[in-house]
Image 1 (cartoon, rainbow, N blue to C red):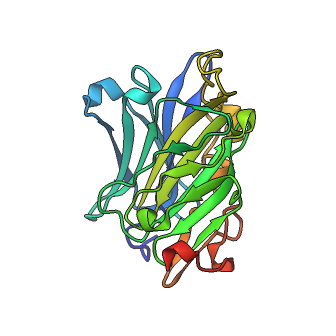
Image 2 (image 1 turned 30 degrees about the vertical axis):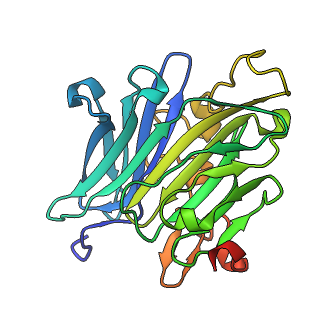
Length: 276
């Protein structure tokens, strides 16, 4: 341990946790040294007493710490953004993760629909990822690198990303000709780099033409901790949502997925014409 310098192996993962009785936001990271300090904030601001954070952190056999911290959701899910920050003794850098739930967006089948998502101010060298979820685990379908301007879009016939706007932090997604119930679910937008991660959840409800308001909006699809493949109170190291197991490894000139992960590898696609 004496040979280890202050480090956080990757930006923390932040995700919601819902049951019938609990609504929480969890923040996790691992391979940290020395023992980390965690702080929480909201946007708009609220008091630390209102957040009432719970944090658990234990070292592994070589002295690296795994961390999980969580707070209860205040009011309605879309009332606040939740920001988790990790700091280390003697280090000035912060590793941050934030989570926001947007209000449900309703659309009409056959019409275009825009899902807004914006990076925090001045975020540099980031990867933008979009995923879709109805039940169970989310599926990544689009990835964009601000370093290379490359985009991988497995749903090119359904969605479009303006890569020029994305380069400046506007990762909003355009759904082309909303395809009824196929698009009903939760879209997850994530901006991430080596020290930060910003995630936005947006639930979409698409109805047939002329039927707006005929049915209730779709609730966020992530309904229980078991959807994440986790069990609350599990021993450290803590489990992670499958879609966040492999934070992007940012290296000079490329962005790739961790070999054990499931993220798109945008080194294997050609330059998007819009980014040239």
